[in-house]
Image (cartoon, rainbow, N blue to C red; front, side, top):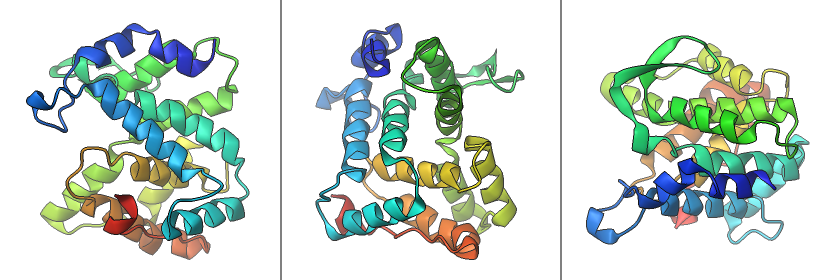
Length: 230
């Protein structure tokens, strides 16, 4: 059984199929599972060898130039796409649980629940190496960081500096020195636009990622625009 098949057969997915997608009005009839499948579709769009617009063509060439194994990167992001929000039905900021990686008590919020789901589902799965599993767990754990940084900027005009970007980069892919971690987080951010009326936070994240981090490393990513995403 593949990891994706195991996700679809899990109790986590069963809950997602009956939990309304909060990106849309309740009367839409859309469920959390619909959102997760839309993000999966957007992830697959990123890795098409025949991109569907100029931005995705430039992005694909950029990804080829990184030297990443694009097939493995796609498979990792597909799992993250399906699990990043899957803990929302059990989200409860008034409760605490032990973080499965940090081993510290944290609020019972959906990113940590997503990590719990991933650890449970990927246990003994042979689709991924242990290193790839750690990248999946850490991407899920950090998937809300770009939006939280954007909201912080709106309030304080403070932009995280180089060391903050490097810390997240190193956390996501600790065994890599090619910036796989932060670039994969940016790609996930690109995929996770389903139900978003505005992508201002996405554009901000790419701009600041380049300005504060990737420009200094000689690896600036192409920056999306509103018309590229729709």
